[in-house]
Amino acid sequence: MKILVTAKLPYDVLKHLEGHEVDYNNTDDPLTPAELAERAKDADAVISMLSDKITADFMKGCPNLKVVANYAVGYNNIDVAAAKELGITVCNTPDVLTQATAELGFSLMMAAGRRIVESDKFTRDRKFRGWKSDMMLGVDFYGKTIGIFGFGRIGQAVARMAAGFNMKILYHSRSKKYSAEMAMNASFVDFEKLLRKSDFIIITAPANEGTKHKFTMDAFKQMKPTSVLVNIGRGEIVKESDLADALEQKLIFAAGLDVYEFEPVIEERLFALDNVVLAPHIGSGTTDTRAAMGALCCDSVLSVFAGKTPNNAL
Ligand code: DGY
Image 1 (cartoon, rainbow, N blue to C red):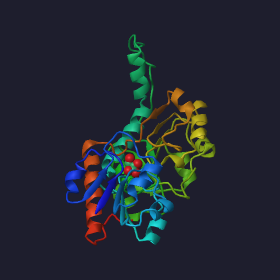
Image 2: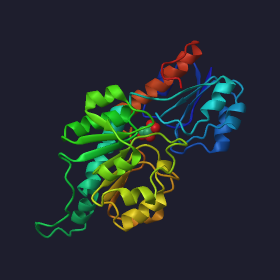
Image 3: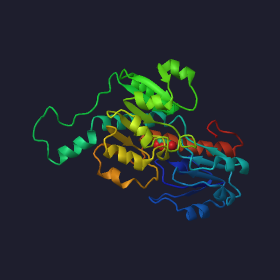
Image 4: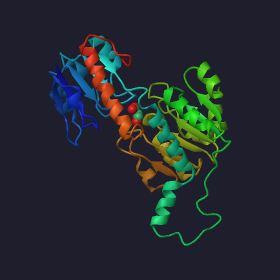
């Protein structure tokens, strides 16, 4: 069997896939769509990255393709419906990255709320000339209200961390999650209430028709001026130009972003703002988690080759 691995992974894929022909893009450059199509055309499996567009046309050009294992939990880069029609199994990497991604979300929330990056720059610029009572004032976390948009595995992991800060937990998602609500003492609220009542809002939802541009100027106007917004879900959930306006006008206190509407392009005005922390989509970016994701992708491919349906098949 031929397996295309579209980008370099911090995991020994060649060892895990021994016995198969592996076309490994072991370089620092992502494949262009044309290179991807060319190298995948006789592949039985593709281990893809969230930056690869796995379209219906692409899959139609790969007659041997049996499985696409996406090295991410999100799969909005893949036309899953078309894959199903073509009889191609699509897998993602749930569970193994839940904790790391939630931890990054919490880090961004704290970094934005306590102005860590701005303070670091201030200190490195040698502007710290002695303690002052009003220097770099941030916001409190303990006892405040967190609003979680999207209450799946990652949202619930964030809730467990928030409980350690004695936070009141609100959430909004497509459906009520009764058992998680009970376990975490979380309350389902409508979107407007989430906006109005939360001191922190963290987006952990996937991109789909229901979540696209959910956060626009209209939403930011309803949020507290002391609130912090974090996005570790998908960029298109936030209208980025509106967020830049809201941050410029100080309609909210700060934001922390790991994902972007037109990734990897970022709204230019955000670079000039001190009240936003920008991360380069590193939600699952820890050594152990990225290795576990690599192992899961390889296992998924081998399991489909063995005629099985992996638990993580979509
Ligand atoms: C994913 O894997 O989809 C997330 O973006 C985590 O970084």
